[in-house]
Length: 511
Image (tube, rainbow, N blue to C red; front, top):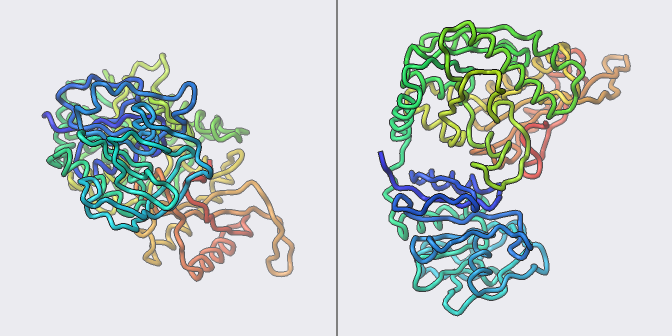
């Protein structure tokens, strides 16, 4: 089915995916393409957004796109670097800012008569993130918003449906960013807002049927939202040709292997449990570097799946629950220039010796979108509400080398923390929570005895997509009780700390 879509040109910003997510919140289909690998601008594209970038338009090798097929022909919105690109390339002047313009700012002037800025109050808070600033604009560029420090906070090229913002409307810190984006997409571009979860399911199932045919598919289930939704989608498409495997890598939460297998009973999924603890512990022995741990786990997962798939006849595909943040944090978005943050164990393809092709039905979706898709398919609310859990499991929550003893300690700590959140009615108010085993020992006193034991850090964040996150202000009384329970009940721990850093600059996981 053909539907309206918007092209987002990626100049390397980590916020590019947030733009896509905000667009999708408005039930509008978007695709991200690198600025230097632009698709053919044919009738299928209804509008274009230019993303931000860590680069400067003044750099010798600045990322500059050929906009000849777009500007003045399709509605166009430049964001941050995109705004500077439209100024720099078409007669304006971009200069280094006297001070780095980063963080919250308030608009001091808004042209509410302009279609883009309708409904935006004059003192609206916006989020700036740029080292350059637009010093001058051509005469036919009209300023439609300013702050006290940034005169050209937004502009409109008269005679065209071309608009630009030097701030980021896609981040939540821009209080009226959603209004601005809706003004552009619905009022200016005329999108019908018809891309819904039901449509995604319909199109994805049809595409999977066409792509896979009568081939058999093996899927790794984890008990998490992503792999479960991927499994149900594939089951809708290919039914009994889907074979699900749940691997116990020895890095799961306490009792998770048994509870997950029980959970999938009655869902119509063909699931086999595989105990591979010792294989993972062996390959992780003595490995402390986080990237090496991720790669070792990824490699062992592939070995286990290879072994299991070889026991099945004519399996042609390996399915994965990879989602968009996994992709963008591992490699550039669709081959674009975004900076790599960390590798993910399930991103990057398979080795040559493995005969399976990869299918990833969710790799264009954010976590909240996956949940909406799952809800539309009738998946249990409790399962969809589970906090995200990293694919490498507790391995990246144990700083330093991995041992069975450390895993056992962290499982107990994690169990106390998560159970306490549920008991206190706080679980659903937190996007993700977990405990981190720290590679430090500290002095403590238990009874009359001196102890020298390990410390753990508790982490709880609120987020919508995993791309940005703020630490949750859990009640002091709650933290005090949890700390006391952990120290009293978990042998080997004598100190508990709470992580109060946000993303960025810190990631949600510690490794």
